[in-house]
Image (tube, rainbow, N blue to C red; front, top):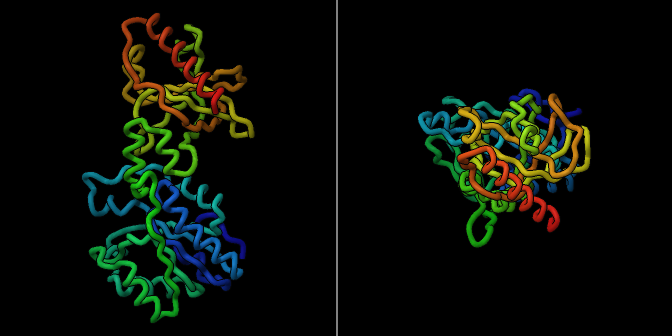
Length: 314
């Protein structure tokens, strides 16, 4: 049975015959801590000729429990699916999280999974995983109910970075502060934007710094400012260094919606309509308003010089 990268519910997997190893969690960001859980499922499945899957939830549970202040996601779920596939996960199960699912008693959670996924043999979670009605279930609950069902339960302690646990919350805080290098360290990969280039006002071109303009509004927005980045076309393997501004351009615009403006440090043939991927590498400075276009031009030149230095030193 050939599996799709992602399915919306359990029904598509009912006929699986190979043993299923299932990692469970929201896994927003698919950071290094998440990978420790997910890769355990992948490696175990590969060792015994089974299949690996990730059960994740959409929408984020906070939208049900805290609709007035839901968690702002680091990644859209489509990006999560791509990252999971790159890790080696055979299929992502995108389970709708609603009141009926949230109301499943913790003691019945694994039994309901086993009924939906008869080939299920093992569960993989983080040590702080909570589940079931009123989040009453924990790893010990999984172990006790798993033994009754013949399921193995693996739990992974939280990975630490600089003495503190890696978490999606911590990454959101780093992004909000513009600490992109720290965010990348926690993620285990470079934070990235993917989008289509649109036509701009051509002000950058008029002052000697043409830009590729990408409208982009993630739920969890990085700090507005100037960054050293690298970019490439979706059809190319090689990266080009660049300096990018993300924000509302207070000197030249009254825009209410942010824009990512990428100025290549080398010549590029990319133009309007191209789809590009941008990886964020270092924070240079906050976005700011300037008194004149000349002052803006001078600052951009300084930003490019800093980016050139960063590019030379990797």
